[in-house]
Length: 142
Image (cartoon, helix red, strand yellow):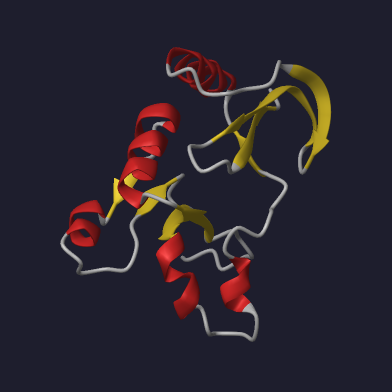
């Protein structure tokens, strides 16, 4: 049986270099890169990385902005600030991510405690940036 409840399917991030971004997300966050070879060969307009079985991040090249015509003003979304995207992780994965961020000298905040989110208060969280300046929060609840 398929669960058709409302879920987050994908997030599109504007990036300057999709291949380098995919490398960052794979090596820092442990995400699986998707369609990298197809993108490099020009067969698809953008690659993606898999967050989990249900959610991916599309890594949209900034050069695609002029082709965003699905809604009036959509092209101007390139570089439009989103405050941040939050990833909720199990405690062990949180520790692994924090270590990878530190190993790769990724700019990151200090760890904070008891911040409110979709599941209540998270025990710990921190913020970091990807190479294009997109801000992420990592947290765990358990």
